[in-house]
Length: 65
Image 1 (cartoon, rainbow, N blue to C red):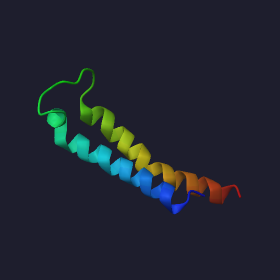
Image 2: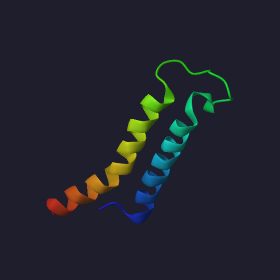
Image 3: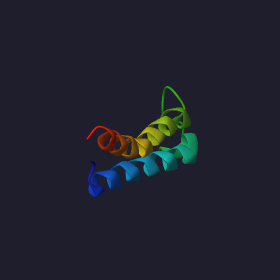
């Protein structure tokens, strides 16, 4: 199982991704300096994956141990 510190950092990283996605396209210096996809399209799935990973890992550990 993931220990509490590892879970904390996964959840913290996911909250940071959600906050950056909520700020929108102007989060870097207040101007559009990014290329590629919009931050919402890249940061929301990453934040969701980071949020779900500790639960998935602990569920898999309990199911197969």
